[in-house]
Image (tube, rainbow, N blue to C red; front, side, top):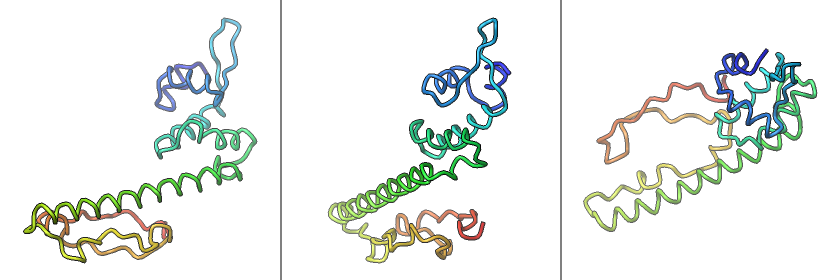
Length: 167
């Protein structure tokens, strides 16, 4: 198939496909007229790349997953190099969450300093502390109730997603 057909099938621009080729993630064969030609395996590679990008991975992060698929594995994440990327990304996300929790605590303290009537109770102040639940699959979810943001003026959002340990 030509580049336009591949782009249409996977929902990306031809420019993106050329970039993936330039980065060595996919490779086109050249037809006698010089046009790029792709096959079904390239569809799978581009779908994997797009899925990883949508999950916050970089193109460089995608490389081991693409190589794993090229090696004939059913899933791009089934190779040890891909698992290492997953673990590194999870560690990065955990670090970001901890940084956000610290920033939230700092803002809560600043709010208490400038607006004594807006002081949050100790329970509300530490509502998002990580007690290890971030890394524990299947941890019980809190029940949705009235929001704790702005003293209960903002209702909580219902989370209808399944728990990771039950899906």
